[in-house]
Length: 377
Image (tube, one colour):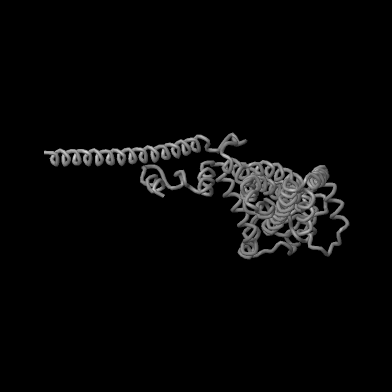
């Protein structure tokens, strides 16, 4: 407590830089030093806001994603939108679809809900299944470990696209399609998560505090919940942040192949499927969903790399720009300097206290000697 108070009084330092600072504060401090990760987090926040506020934004525009506008289509030219830039106007902010005249902004906004929702749902399923299987394999006996590891290898070797095509083709159309796509992707692609969790759990099992918990009589479930899961948080969160863009690409690919989200529900992959014959007559119809996918995947990938670097400062970032490595090194140097200053002040205080104690003892000894001398006289 006293160290934290002294550190807060040192110029240029705060409690986040003190030795007793929490892991969360250290994580946010490291993440803020990476400019690329901060920008990517802002882009992801805007995309999530676009998806959540899609009904409000389309209501402001006065459109919806399913209404046809045949008057905005030039049938003589094969269904090309009337007007410049694909029919961009005050009523249609990004223009309209060829042949149908449906509003592109409304379909992009609602498509963000589907694409991001499917990706996040699939990521949650992958993480849950992977953590359960990985921890069970690492904590089980040799036979359980071998069995679960071989099952994991089978799922890792499965081609995601082919298996997803087969499963999505046989499921009745009455099942909610976005939920089905998320479940199929998550239940097929959890193998790599399980391998990472198993390897990390085996490492944590050999640490002293886990052995002490086992010797104290804790059961396996309590050890996993109280000792192992907190240690697994950093690698799992890091890998989950990188899974989201991969799942967005997988959903877009499945919708592009025609087995993903079904019309009239919009998704970015489905829009790309419908736009593959209009790239010359109406290029914005292809560029808008493709650009949205590119920006989303790029932002999530950069953010995932930033989270990985912030959770494990010993790992160098794979990015070459915007990582703020100099500022992060300076922040770490300032933190070490603050810790050194705290230790120096504490050592000086201990020395002063010891000196004062020595002086008191010397004075007491002198007084006792004088009293003894007077008594003898």
